[in-house]
Image 1: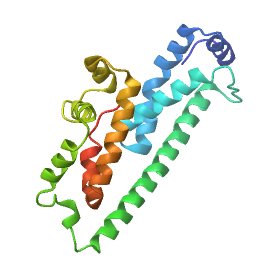
Image 2: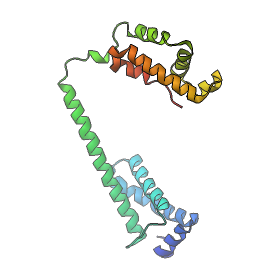
Image 3: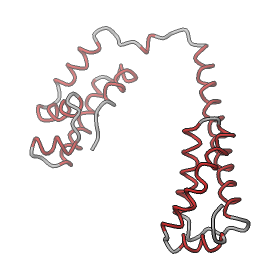
Image 4: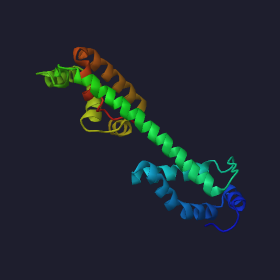
Length: 193
């Protein structure tokens, strides 16, 4: 294991000694990942949890008080993170099961299909925007430009782009309110800043 006492190692880490921190990382990373894998049975999640534990060790190095040993502290931290991860996954799975169960009662799926002519109605609504607003909207939505890129191209401020996009989206939502659930997918394609 590590040379030197845990308190000396921790004191070195508290003094921002990257070498001491790196030594701890190299010594414990693989065993801690193997330990996490026992709980999670997923290498990627296990590595992520161990990395989070090491990150927290570095970020909280000034406040950490270890009563037992550094090894016990690190492995206990991994175990707690694994428990939290498992609980979070149970909640997500429970929610997914509930959504799927509620969907089994559904017999009408028409809301997920584009209504005939909707694309034409969307294009008509966009064409009804004021010329500059329409240009900004198309640059964002169709060309995938960010607000800064649009501002540079049109030689206007980013704030003007933001304002015009807000007004465009508001006007389009109003024009297409009868199709609001479908249109949201279309309008949400707009890139931000």
